[in-house]
Length: 349
Image (cartoon, rainbow, N blue to C red; front, side):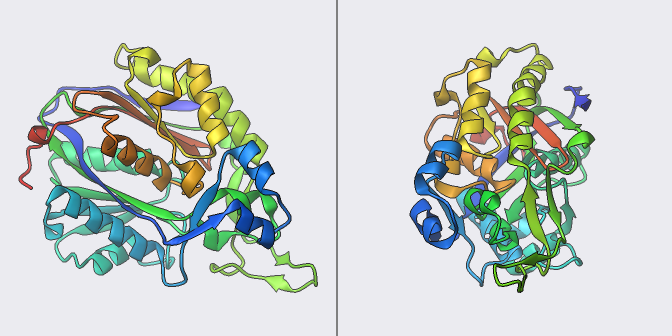
């Protein structure tokens, strides 16, 4: 893999996450429900991938409406006026339209009028760090003071009903970081992005024709576009590469995995998360898992897991936190941060 680390340099400010917003569709689909929909068993799903239920978007839910709800939730949690947001970055692989950018539609649905908006397509799941890295650079440059990073996908609308593998894994959700300047030496201190193009076809959205048992052509909500994954490839890649990636990320600041207070990973499936933590020889208490309840929600999953750890008091000011995402590409992103206290933020609420 080609790595491009960026270590801490003298900067006028740090970059911190003031708040994390979320949106979860109301519809809960259990393993028992899937047994009635496709040829699978609840026991197999639980044993092999550790998922018990997932959220499915309603017909009225779009990527933009979900993202806007997460953005407004982040503003509510932090007491921030939505119109004080300077920049909206949306990471998605399920845009409502090919153009304009989904971020512009998020602005529209959230009622924003002052921000600049664009999308970042890093292949889906890795977007939780790739889009954060873009936002951090803008904040450090001084060009923007308050950035909303929206991660939203309606992946279940890309599912092929004849594909048992993808049908049991994915769910829908949206998350939003509010990223702002903080006191130097805190917040996101190091990011590392990496790609392994040899795994280009391991996870993708393709336009392969699909027919049902009667030979009739099947369409997703996105026409003939369906999500495809080679589960074995993703599992092997994650277990063989992500533990070493975490170690390398920690080494950028002369740390070891044992020095990390929390390691939040892409919510691919529970067994992969557990396997990575086992390889790092870290207890499961030092990670946050939601894939068992929400399914694999693409880039939003790790961000929602980060929020859950904060809400549970498992992450507090000063903690060393690592966020690692991986997915189609094969792409990997890692961010090392020192979690901020409210008084660290330099912009007014």
